[in-house]
Image (cartoon, rainbow, N blue to C red):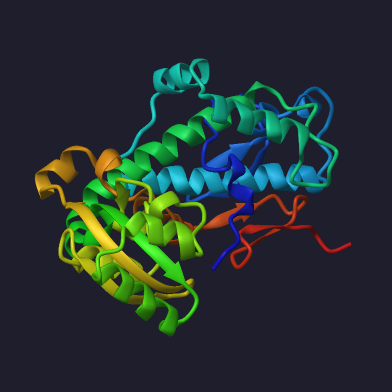
Length: 305
């Protein structure tokens, strides 16, 4: 598995028209990346000759990755990000998105000197990356949603669950005896449960069943509604549980609102898997002054001195 540390903004940069005297620094599956493209990123790349240092190689690697991913987005997912969409996103960044840009400005991936020379090209790169990931995830989820719905029902089912967690099997048997004899569930949970963050044993409601650790998640999917269930053993210990509600939307409801009806990590996993595959088999040619391209690391290796 390749390291994707370079993907900070790599799959986002917008290609620009090259001037007639632009120098080709790299070619990715037949598409040129020039010094005009990289000059958009930093003020230090503008005017004087560029120094082929580690920072430059990181930035150029980002451009290479972005071109590879954007090509696959177009060809495999039919995702094309328009300039107008990028302009609108850049003008309406969320607080988290603006924070990511500022974090990059002050904390460099190459050393800890920050990026005080970061130019508007990087800001636009980030805005584009947000759009690319968002659009790709939507397209991937739409393509794979039937499989998710069929093979991973816990990713679309939401539950309301109460539980009591103890460390040992004898302890949970005692808890079950107390509850079966009519003691109040909330009182027992508050007295003995190791999950002190859930008063009365009440877990966040509703929650995707997939958000719980197995086999607790499996039990949340199958336990009769409103009935005491246990013991259920997980990595945390032994549980007594009651599922108060369980709701699974129809396939059409999920297909119409993927973001609102699917456990987010299930969709994120589609993106990660697709991204890894998208970077396989990319043909990269480099100006030898810059170095050589490592298919294993998906990064530039400096020339031997």
